[in-house]
Image 1 (cartoon, rainbow, N blue to C red):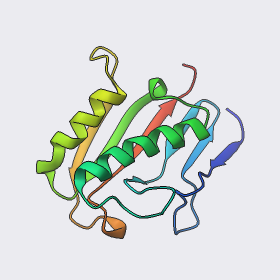
Image 2 (image 1 turned 60 degrees about the vertical axis):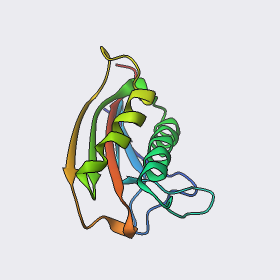
Image 3 (image 1 turned 90 degrees about the vertical axis):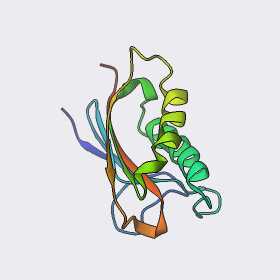
Amino acid sequence: MGKRISIEVPGLAHTNPIPNACRIGSLLMTGGIFGKDPATGKLAPDIAGQCALMFANISTVLAAGGATPEDVIKVYVWLKNKDDREHVNREWRVMFPDEHSRPTRHTFKDEDQPYGALISCEVTAVIGA
């Protein structure tokens, strides 16, 4: 497989001593990705903005680890309010436009999101498969 590599992205660092993502060989797994602006470190004020930023941050973390959205095989999403799923689906279709080539996804309700977030996710990718 290879040596473990920690992936750190400026502006998206966690407050705990964990990286944004970790890669061993072709496998990349992220920690929590949130809808915060990496330039300001602040969450967007609403679910639509947080969702858009979260998906942009997914792309940024993937790129830092040598991956692209095409390498993603699984996404876990946590929503404070499951009725906000429409915002996830909107951004999902933008990131994964081919309905015959989308990763799997599981969405959970989590009323206790860290940092006051309305949404967060974790992503698993297999690079160059």
